Image (cartoon, rainbow, N blue to C red; front, top):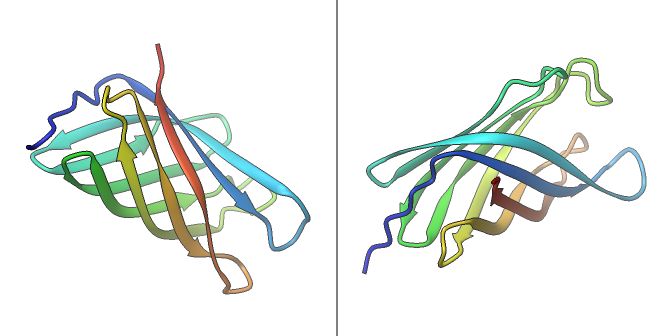
Length: 123
């Protein structure tokens, strides 16, 4: 049975990562808006003061979202405007208010990395 979710509103997006240049675990967060057209789901960050940006494109199959991500880092931040991209898969909760999954992509040393990505509908 197909699940139809209403993704309207603002969502808080957080992904985890390790840096190839400094020790520790980090997270990157954005507020995003979601647009759905048929089984296509597009998430785009809301502009912020830092000038960074994230775009996610998915194909939806029930509660499963499979797609790609692209991030343009802040030109003012430690990654100096570098673009990163890769693949992502998320599972939508039964109530449609959270999405959890994994991303995969490369780092600056050309190593493939993977970690958690979570989105939560804001109130």
